[in-house]
Length: 282
Image (cartoon, rainbow, N blue to C red):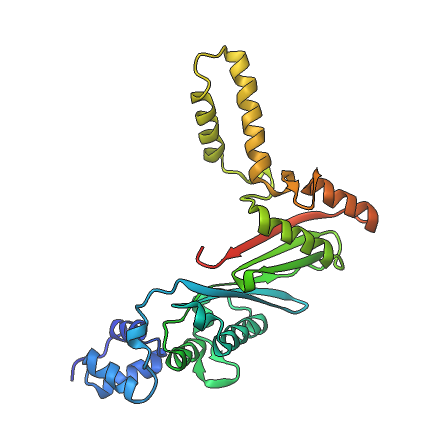
């Protein structure tokens, strides 16, 4: 019989989505023949989704789950919006974020290998394969993040377009101001900032903007050019940085000024520690 190597097992797993142990068993039964091993798994009802694995997944859904310690965000994709709106698909994704909140995996790859908490005889990846069999489309967990909460922070979650766009904002300074955090999350959904503050903008991005600005001002005296370029760079940073953007619900103030007003009302200094903006397909 042909020697069963770890490389062969990994290859079969990638093709089928079935766990490593079952892949090894199938290869042993198939005497090392990859196609026969796939047939073994399919006959066992474990790999009916093999041919579907390569199909493109353009539609998707983003969901969250939180407890006192963590907040989990995950995106799963399928081939059609019809499937992403199916209760079985939604149940699968909600199971995933609930388990991730309990187990706190370090990566998506680690999470997929975990035993499924409702049926420990299969992994999360095998559970995904069963959902593929049930719904008849390729389904992938695209990304998963476990956000570890800080005791001095509040977390606001805003879901838009039925879970096609989800924003999480962390406000530092108080643990009971989820409403303020959600207000800013709604702003982030609408205005799509690239950075939290100017200090986060990479130097090469600023240099590129400056180069473009100077190329538009050829022939101007150097002192005038410098002032205009400085103004253009400030306008650019105000546009791409969350704290300097005009607040969507009151454009007479910036997001930072809105937060400062909220801080005075609650009697505590508040600041935005971080934000996450996920859109399906990005």
